[in-house]
Length: 306
Image (cartoon, rainbow, N blue to C red; front, side, top):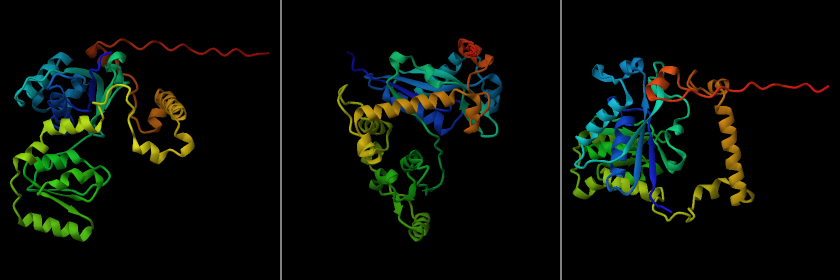
């Protein structure tokens, strides 16, 4: 049996929209695919021409997914010193003017064939801050990528003493605070100082090569197939009588069934905050992406027993 792994990196934005959720995943797939030992796919949204005109800058629009794919590949190849080999898949999406966000339409997992479904990476929004001093006080959103970007750009980073920021403590330009008073003092000191130059070691630790190595290690990707993975969280949150493999599997199966049953209903989706008419792609999106029309649902006939 082949031990070659397949990564599918899903994100909610794509070039030419210059945002963190289009750029960071693109670099991630490029460096995951760099050594050629993995199959890597970038999964990005396809917008209709009308939505492209609302989102993409400088009047850039694409007549087909293939045309946009070419734009994305040229952009990344001009910015790395190697030729990355990865696939690009598109899922149907719409732009919400109210939310100022791109929202998926239908089941995005259909982009990946069952036999290729292995490891899914779901990217979240990140935002880049441009000042000599970068402040990330969050302990809930914990947008750690922005802290890494700021440190790599030679900025002073001020962040909370939180597990998500543990990695950044090794860098001289990272200032950690424990309370409001420390936060104020560190901010005033940082504004009066100049950031310390980064060493070669620190620069490497903030590179995509090092980030990819840490990602592989944290995800336990290099473990031989079939070798058990230890998840401390499961020991913490499951009571003793629910820790057997069979019981946990049954609970997971029931959870998946319930989620699929509820998320397949337009009324239920909208009740939980989904945007209307995003359960299935419309005819224009299907035409653009060459998707088949959904099968017609059979009407249930109830037979009365007398």
